[in-house]
Structure formats: structure tokens, C-alpha cells
Length: 535
Image (cartoon, rainbow, N blue to C red; front, side, top):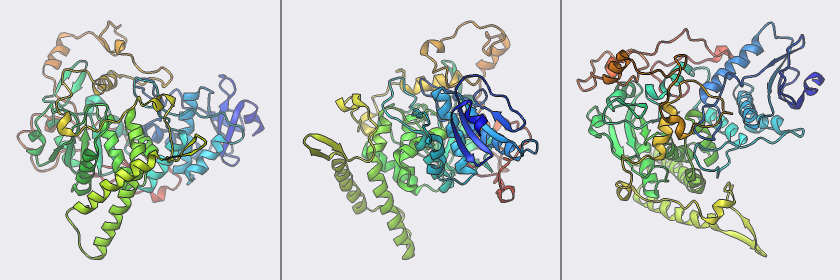
């Protein structure tokens, strides 16, 4: 222990005499010796930023870290050594590394989020900087390391996460823009994906997918409902003709939904027979915001925990004022969730299942309570003008106190003509940045600028090459490469989808190595048809 402390600013002990997390004093890498094994993950597990965002690391990175650490703890050659995960004093690298080992402690060491967080901040530890959103503007909302650890704990409690059966190849395949740009947020319930277009093609440097590209995948994973939040760029019948329920709940890119849209979304989700695929333009801001409302109402997440979990699943989600709006709705959604569960329990006890859980009277009551909660949130106790804000947790900076982030409560009908297809919106920019990624970039390099998105000459050793005659022919006949996970079902696909999804090849998988967990005998078998995050 003395040896580790001599080179570190701070040391956190997670397994007594065995596992440590150290922040180094200098950039010099420590060497392993007969009694101590040092390792770092900063050159292999990196966050891919949009602008100035730098974390938290996604589910695939968390999975790979847990595999790595479990392997070291089970290694015979390291069985008598102290294992030290070290990081530098770089604040962004340090907080991501702390997120990984803190999450490991929750998942495998069965620590509570408070117990996992405490060693990281005790004994004069340097403060951890908060995470921020993927917006181009300055940060107005702080998402803390503690929020992220609480989100992982809540995800485990609610069955959202099971690294023993998590399918990392599937996750990394489908999160790519060229393969569909989709992520499961709530197992068997919510899938967030990038908005489909009228036809599959390459445009402005990134691939677009038609609705038919998703049909096969949706059928295999029991998706029954598609919710569109952005301006119409494809005909809804291209989903509904295949048996999917299609709903439109439009509101402007980068804005927050009206109370009417929020309640309609929740009602659709509560009555859907299968999983729900939600998209806006990029499937990040508007999509993440409404899914967050559901998990806050039905799974006891706070606004910060919901934001953290959705970003761990789908980095870049929930942007700008959407974060503050969720904080404002937290009390109302918690109340509505309690009412929903009470009414459902009452109906179950009486052997009666209503088609809609919330009656008109209940919905009116919720509206009244919403107004009351809104007013209560604004109450301030004034003792000699020394204002005490009694809201649950205020995260707005001084700039926000000047009213710079006014809420947007436009409903779908009023907003439908406000978003032009020719206008470059926040969603377009995020889509383009994500599509231009060809290899991991360190979270310390910052986000791409829009100038970097313009075509420019590259050497032949770099990923982008000038278009040859053969590649030009390929792009002229481009078909969306969204791939189904497994072999097609025995029933023949419909004629409409035969030109796209049915022709796509499955993922080419290496031999799957199970997570070397602490209790292998308790691993649940992989369900071939499961659509959950825990694949």
C-alpha cells in the first residue's frame, strides 16, 4: 500500500489488500513488480465526443472493462499481487476511469452506489469534474459521477442491465450509423434509433436508411410500435403496412415537448403490446427526453439518473434545456407513477384490467397536480431576502437565472410547419458528426468542428480515399447495410421488404467469450430472441 501511495495523489481501496484505484502524481507509467500489478485503460477505452462532451463511457466500454478486470482478478499469475487500476490527473480521463471501477464495484462487488462512490472521494481526493451534454453551446447542467453510479445501480435493480448476457458485438454493430444507429434503452420496451428517410442512400457524407431497412430487425425483436418525433420525411404507411402501429408526436428539434405530447407518449407506451422504437432526427435529444419521462415515472429514476442511464446506453442523448425540463417534471412524473401503480394494483385485486389505466378523471387530476407542482417548485423561502430555493436539486448556472432557457411548450400540430427539411438543425449536425467517425477518438481530443466535416484530400493510408470507378458504382446502387442479428424467420418476408432488409447478411461474429464473472454458475442462458440491453 505504501508503494502505491508514494506515486499517487489519491488511492481508493475496493477489495482490501487486493484491488485499488490510483490517481498518479506524474505522467510516468508505473511498472508492475513482484507484489503489484498496474494497468490502465485510457488508450483502449475512449469516449467518442460530439463537441465538448467527454463521457460517461458507453455500455460496450463498461462491459470490456469488467471483462478485463475480472480476468485479472481470476488470473493465477496475479493471484498474490495487488491489482492497481491507475489513471492520470487529467480530469476527463480520471472521471471516466472512476466511473468504470465504481460501476464494477456495484455490478460485481455488490456495493451500493454510495459505497462505490465513497472510496473515490475520501481522504482528500481531488474533486471529480461533472459530465456535460453534447451541445455546441456552454454547459448549463452538471451530471455528476454519483448520478452515473446511481443510474447503473437503478438499471441493475430494474433488470435493464445484465453483463453476463450482454452481447457486445451486437451493441457495437448496430450503434454504427451505417448499420442502423440504434440502441436499446429499456429491455424489451424502448429502442432509440436515428430517423429513417424516404429511401436508402448516401447523403452529405453519411448513409440514410429507409423504413424497410428496419422491418426485419423490428420483427425479430418484438417491436410493435414506432413513434416519430420529427418532421415527416417518409410515409407512415411504410411501417403500418407491415403491421406496426405508427404514431406522430412532432415537436421542434432541440426543444422540449408540451405536457400534451408527454402524456400522449406515456399513454402510448403504457398500452403498447410490444417494444417501442422511438426516433427523431438523430434519435438523441427529443427521443431521449421522452424515454426518460417513462423511466422516471415507472422505474423510480430521478431526472439525473435517467439522463445518465440513457447516455450510457446511447451517448449524446438529451441536450441543453431538455435536461432542465426533465428536472422540472421529476416531481410530477414520480407522483403519476405512484398513482399508476396504485390503480393497477387495485384493478388486479378486483380481477379487472382496464384497456387504459388512466381514466379521464385521473388524467384531469394529473393536470391539476402538474399545475400545483409547477407552482410549488417556484416557492422560495425568503428570510431577509436571503433566498432559499426548495426545489429538489438546482443545477442551473448563473446564466440561466436571467431566463435564457425559456421552455418550449409547442404541441405537435402547431410545430409541424416549423422544421424545414432544408434547414440544418441540431439533429443534422449530430448525425453528420457520428457518421464521420471511422476510428475511436480520445475523449481528450474534443469534438469535431463543422469545418472538419467537409471533404478534403487524404493520403492512401488514411480511412477515406478518393472514389474509384468501382466505388462510384457501389454508391450509385447503395442499399442500406442495416443487418439483422440472426437468420431470417421461417416465414417468407413480404414483397415490400424483399428489396432491402431481407437481402442483408447477418453479423460476422468471432467466437463469443462469456464475461468472466464472479459467479459463473448463476449466469442466465442467452435468449436468442431477446431484445434487451442485457444481451
